Amino acid sequence: MPLVESVQPDAYCASPGEVYRRAARRLWYDTLSAPPDVLAEAVAVASRMDPTPGRVQAAGSFEDVSVSAVLRAALPATASGSLRPRLEWYTCRGAHFHNDAHYPDVLFGVWYLAGPPIDLVFARLAIRLRMHVGDAAVFDPFEPHAVLAPGSERYRRDDYVSAPVSVFLGFELALDEPVRITFMVAPPGKPESNLPVLSSAAAVHPETGTLYAAGHGTPL
Ligand SMILES: [Fe+2]
Image (cartoon, rainbow, N blue to C red):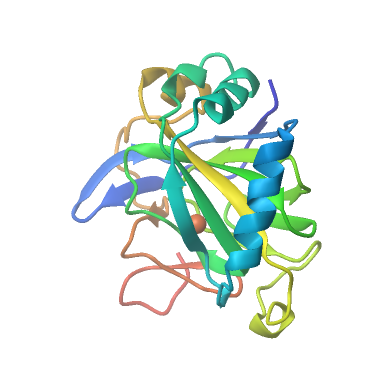
């Protein structure tokens, strides 16, 4: 079961005005065998998209029982029943650091299906996942993350202006009890003022992933 555990301190995940859980302490990272028709569709998606450098761009949602079956078979058995049926294509030419804290009820999954080798980088966790075609990952959308050229420490827009398009098949795991246990998502617990807060209001430095408190210029 290829789960990657963070050794970094906990963080709170908060919706506006409310702390409701801690960040997932585990990610999942594995290589899946992609059916030829899915790979061909990813190449077709790449050819019709022209994403702005640095930004992840959605390219259409769909449901496909055979694709979901491949994902379920590969995911940790304790979490595979939590896979939601909706799938979505995402494209980018690199992606600056950001979080997706407007998705409070799911963990995100990405299956990399077209493009050059890239690094999926989680700044706070100090975790870097090298993604080749066929590799997949599941992570907490509240964690700051970026898509960078292999080995890059910072996002620099100029590096991606003429980069080939990367295509991910996105999926979601419902944040139910089995997923919370598998990915070590704890309840908020006793408030600890020194823990970072991951939310839509926490600014993420786009080049480095450093977290800043809303309205403040000092890193958390
Ligand atoms: Fe994202």
